[in-house]
Length: 343
Image 1 (cartoon, rainbow, N blue to C red):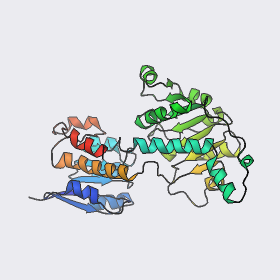
Image 2: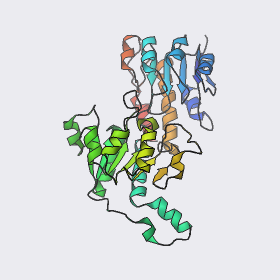
Image 3: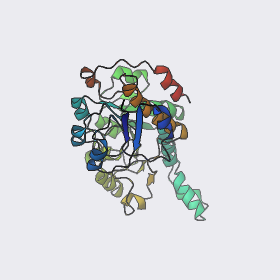
Image 4: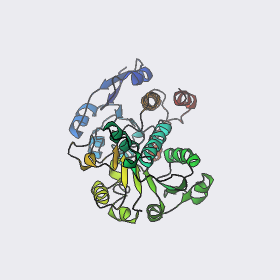
């Protein structure tokens, strides 16, 4: 009997030990490559039974070239590298890992919020430059009584909302998929995007990258914000129109930004953000802890194993509409996933 062919299109880890541990089976062959382009993905994946993907483009043309593929599993929460509708049309399951880094991203966002509010990066720089003078950080204002606006209200911003309540912040949220009743139960006020921009002292972006969210914060939104407003982004860079953000910072429409993600990564060495004292940058690391990385990679591999070895729909099925095209069983491996989440 021929083996299932599982192609890892690209990865940035030291090894694939967690994936191989899950997929180690006499019927499975894991083939790691490092694809950058559509043509490379097509060349390596044309006859693959499953694909594990990080950043390589899985476009409609790539998907239309696939002859045997049953599942495409993506490292992480977002699936913006994958043409999901094309996969559904082709009868291919798309799976992700939506729950692996809720604490990490909400903790990182909180860290950026506090770093900005207390001007810790500036104080660190000035102190190391032999300027022992708190007045270098003026003005600093009390956080209690301020308003945090959450653009998107999924699991991560919900976790963040709980973490900021002891700080005395009130919380607004903008999310078209959430009801006012659900938001009220979470202790937040559901508002429009315009109201979020006008009413928030700090805005934290948690929206996935889709056609409708690309450039969601742009010139008009920045002009509605308070002069002292501060923007945090730990989701995807292109949700913010970068040129508009740079203009807003340069023209003092807003006070600053803390960005874990940018439009093009890694950031270019001549990027304006690098010279701005009112911008805090981290290298797309909000998701990371050793535990989160292990959980993500293991759950990605389990999504592939669910389909190929257990003939089940993966637990984290993104494209539910594919169920009408495939004859797989409901997933019954809840306990295995729970063990990974708590490891």
